[in-house]
Image 1: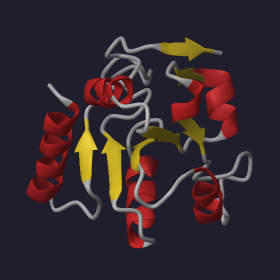
Image 2: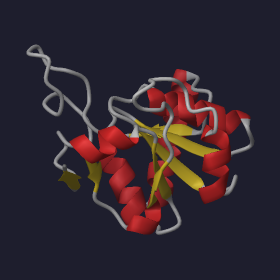
Image 3: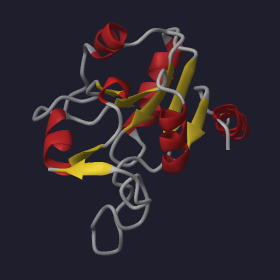
Length: 153
């Protein structure tokens, strides 16, 4: 699929699900977008600790942005999220938001959209996905389960 085909499908998902942001992509679609257009950015909203201890996506460094949604160890929302996002992006950039399981990334995409960003996409399933019956992640869904490039801690 071309970049435009993926973005169109992602936008249609948003219409179908009445999402408050531009669209939603699967992890594989996110990687295809990043590989197909160096201007597209992945915004990893996990905490620094999550990135350090669990791992990160392996993409071009210029495309991988880290802006924490919550702060660690406090667990409180990052009051400077929008300010930090503005420091590394522009409102017209295509942004793919990623978190652990796809919850915080939805909130980040919504907030960015509400503040003038026009091309915000959630990466469905997140980096690790939901837990399996034994309480483990990376086994049910997500970037890691899909076998996409990442570097562990």
